[in-house]
Length: 271
Image (cartoon, rainbow, N blue to C red):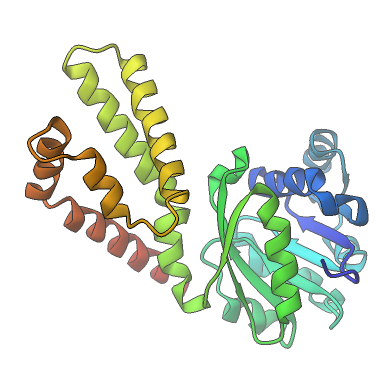
């Protein structure tokens, strides 16, 4: 943990920032950190302060001045205005972390050039401490900066480092991915309902099975995922028929198309 980065400020205290703040507060490093936020609307600031248990200012510039690390956690369409507002306060000793989807490092650096910047792609399961984050550092950010950011985010999920040119793929897989998995779970549950099982029971079956299967993939060690499939789909059995149907319907092409088109859209939004 970088001992010089102790004051962490969040511009924007919405759901994602709130999840990160709550995660940091429960982490071992929390005792060495000071967390603050900012919301320009007084009522929203007061609500955020009461909910998160941190001081929430109503002045972004003051927060930037008093922070070693500044998380940009506003809606993407507000990032440019926020950066213009605080750019004079971004000194070389400060680290800027953007969690705004679709806002490139290049866009950020045009407003605050020569600054230490780390871009992060989060996802909504961070709200239940099962987030998946990808972090990419800009030219002037150090490896220590990147490690610091990743260690903070690890308190509410898993984190990988990527080059920024891969962020759009990350957006498609983990940023948009929760909705795709919700869709699969819902479709399985509705299929069970159509076949005669109560919807809520079908939904629980599909949901818990997705959760357990995901854990088995994470804990598989060196075993290929295909081996996990083969272990369940024994030839001639029920699962084998289901997997064969998926193959006949080209499920691999379906998911490739989903990820490819989502990646393309993320790229367009980032221009």
